[in-house]
Structure formats: C-alpha cells, structure tokens
Image 1 (tube, one colour):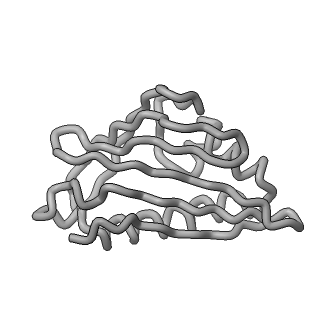
Image 2: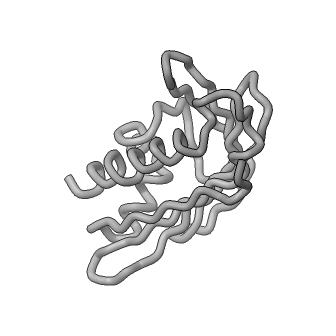
Length: 142
C-alpha cells in the first residue's frame, strides 16, 4: 500500500470565518459531520464518534494536535479495536471574494489493516469526497 497521504481540495462560496465555524463549532459540526458528544478546538482535546461502513460500526478516536485559528486544524484519527494511527490536517486559504479553499490531508492510512476493505484508500477517498464536497459544501452554501 502506498504511504502517500490522501489529499483533497474543495473551494466554497463562503468566507474563511464561516468555514472555520463549521469545522470547530459542535452545533454546526452536527449538521454536516458526525454526531460528536463534545468538541473544542483546543490542543489535547479528545473526541470520538461512530461511523458505519458495510454494516460494521467503527468507533473513531481523535485528539486535537494543532489549532491555528482560521487557518489550520489537525487531529489524530484511530479506530477502537483496530491497529493503526493516522492524522487529519485541514488547512483553510482565503481565495478572496468570499471564497475559501480547504485542503484536507490524511496521512498514515497505510497503518490500518489492509485486509479490511473499509480501510482501503478508495474508501477514505469516497468518504472525504462526500464529506468535503457534498456535506460541508451543502451546509456552507445553503
């Protein structure tokens, strides 16, 4: 498996501060991301959520690693009961005219069990494409 990170970029018709709020305000996160019990954009903050793929529920465990307000948010991404460690980094770029470009980089995908199709690179690509390109975009541009 490739050790290359998965990278996706999207541009939204929404200013940076609104995109940042969507990424860091739990009430807004619940409208387009996952149902988190709590979320605080603070280094060391731990959060978890469940996601289902192919009928199996996976519990995600995350810890905030870096917060640069209006610019960058990164957190670890692990699965309960499965080996592997990865990191999600989300960067925001002001493109002017009320537009924001988001770059999401997910590194460490190769550390997850490769015999499980839910951990295939294509599965992450499909998930992040939907989350950033449909769910978040729809929330921001409604």
